[in-house]
Image (cartoon, rainbow, N blue to C red; front, side):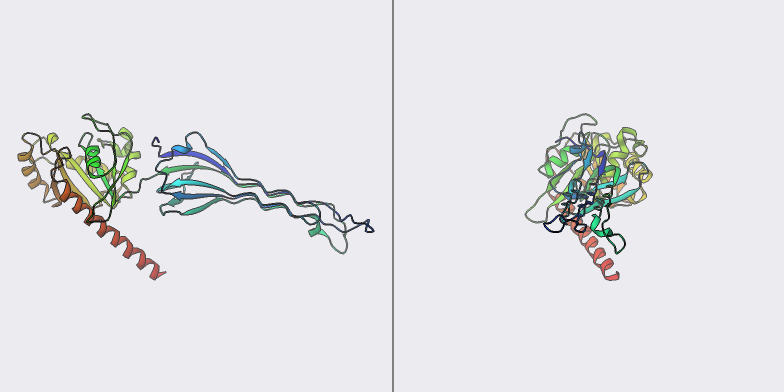
Length: 348
């Protein structure tokens, strides 16, 4: 399944059925009263999240969705059948926006969460509703109400516990493949990762957590350079960030330019994103000369962020303690979110 994180669609709920004009026709009752049934309600359109979808690729070709219309009323007081609701499944993390204005209508972040996006039209009333003492044989009925039509933009923000950020070719895909069961494309050249990848990190000692491999950021990413804005939004919902730095790219042991370049892009894109907790991971310590670089570079980094780890994603050095550390941080963040939710519920 190919990755797609944006889609434009049109949804139209079902029209209501028309009311019926009818009169009783019984033996010995040649001029019976009105008995026209009501039209059925049109079908609603709802969005519902599913954990089985991880992309908006299903909307690449199918862009128009229409719910069933209500059936027309019939004689003998028979109401028309309501139209069937249409449920459109979306991956967790989907944002529903008005296509024209960009106004956010709903962010779907809970499992099996439903959202009514277009309500079906009401069925029209049959002529029996219009009978009165003055007009005992009404010859008109109501037409069904039209359904609602909306043009929508769907945007997907991946839901991950840990989002990996860093410059191209820092080893993010290799790290995800070693920590989890995910198998992103890995090669020794920039921009191997062109789409975000989710992996689940499991351990017998800790609860599993989700890690996201985000394509490498470059200078100007917050302006969209290298599709930066589309990639940056996928780490917005991460509980914490893993900032991966390739030791082979460090210009000098004391230079923090690699660290500052990525953080400046985060800040320019979103101040809240820049404030997320970061774990600094220095990668490729297995390469010749990098161990000495790591020691000095780590000393330079620690005043800014003391949570610094040295690993080799390729050989596996340092991965187990790093994984346990990430699991502990994720658990703390989950507990904090839980406490915040409980507090909000109590206040309400």
